[in-house]
Length: 337
Ligand SMILES: Nc1nc2c(ncn2[C@@H]2O[C@H](COP(=O)(O)OP(=O)(O)OP(=O)(O)O)[C@@H](O)[C@H]2O)c(=O)[nH]1
Image (cartoon, rainbow, N blue to C red):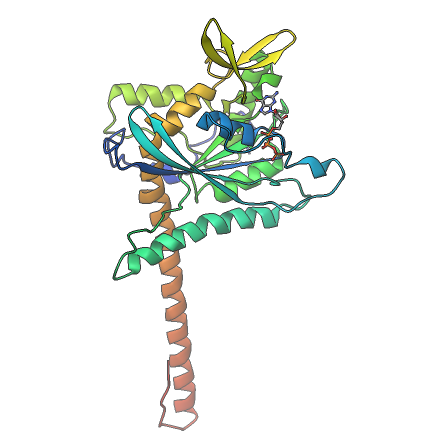
């Protein structure tokens, strides 16, 4: 078996079926595009600060520390919290719904937490499936399918933890996952480069199906080049900050340290700006299309085939039962199925 970092074949991926179904950007800007993002990661990695930074307003009060009970040894169960906010990006209205998961990974056994998130994702698919099967559609139906899950990796400088590997492996075929290094200002440039490389080696070695900026045959050179470039940035190293500083009359979002400032929107300091752009602008339609055309479709096929199989098994056992009765000499059989 090859070691992490050694060459392996391509990761079997849901994205191999991907053909870009729509144009790169939504032009129907006025109506608004619903976009659902999930944030998952251990406590204290800056998920909630990231949410405020992304939305450029205080959506969640980061003064309240969701993970504060950890220090006293009390492990609170994970919560699933929704935040909705209307954003405007480049003339396009985005109805953003962010699903946060405070308490993720705080326990010793996290299998219940994985299941809870999986159930949440699948419940959204089931809701759509039910809606599609209705004779009369509900005009107010809200599609809650999660288009992208940002998975926050702890900035250890080592490799992925088994929690990260198990989680992303388990849910990679239910949602587009982008790994993100939280609190990335804890690294020097060289440390960050090595840490990123190590994580991508693990992702490759453990065959974790993350969103790898797939290109299709129909893509133009510019899109292919852009995707190649973004792939090389993975995982995105982000810094979050609620504070805005006025510097030479230009507002700057920065974390201030005795030795200097880390600017949130400065590409040389971290990848926040790039990630924000792909989420709310360049790749928003891809995330939605892949969710609808590949991930949801494969869930739907899986679910309907399982139901068909259950029905076939029921029918088979009824017919076997009927055969038994016939063989036992009672010819008048009437069975309710
Ligand atoms: N150094 C550094 N600290 C950060 C960053 N983002 C947030 N923090 C700080 O980290 C602490 C936790 O931030 P939160 O945003 O509440 O983290 P969380 O992941 O939501 O964690 P819980 O609230 O425990 O669920 C706060 O003190 C933040 O100010 C960052 O990019 N770099």
